[in-house]
Amino acid sequence: MTGKKTPLVATARRALRALNGADVPFAVIGATALGVRGLPRFTADLDVVVAREDALAALDRAGFAADPAIEPDSEPEALYVLRHGRGSVDVLIASAEPESTVIAEAKPTTVFGIEAPVATLEHLVLMYLYSNQPRHLGDLARIVVETPVDLALVERYLADVHPEMLPVLKGRVQAARHPAPAPPGPPRRRR
Image (cartoon, rainbow, N blue to C red; front, side, top):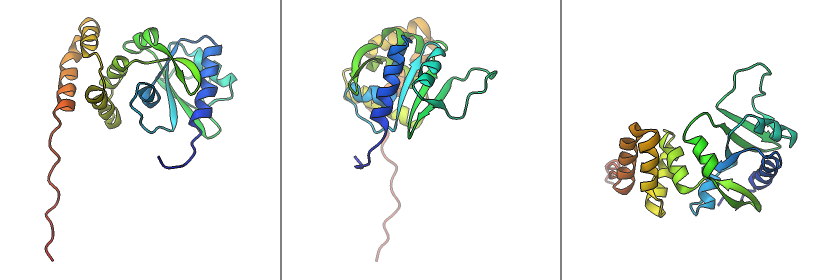
């Protein structure tokens, strides 16, 4: 903990109330979902995946603005960053799988005092499996090593939807459980 106050809690509450009030299908993902599931990780924003772009309108009505601004006739983006004051929400628009399943199966949980659908550990493994961001690889490894995640459930999902991802899952699980040794440091200088 740095001791610095972040706008995360107020921003998250405002966004979750807006999405709940608009009856927009969504799920909390990312570091906030990890924290709710027992694996806290610092984050300065809220990550959500939404089923429809009308979630953007709900957040706009709650005072959030896209950064950069959304051009009226522009092609839809996969990810939008919406800001309110100093806080932000990353909005991932579900375009296929696994996002649609994550939204459909997310479990209602209390997030910063607001009830909202939150991705399960298995959902987070799926989301991180499709990402090559280093922090997501680390998050996937933490889930595998530090929680009772049901990897058989993840494997069944992949076998049905994306069987080509099964070897990727197996490789990342193996790497998480048996990490490579750290490279040797530079030689010590003698005085």
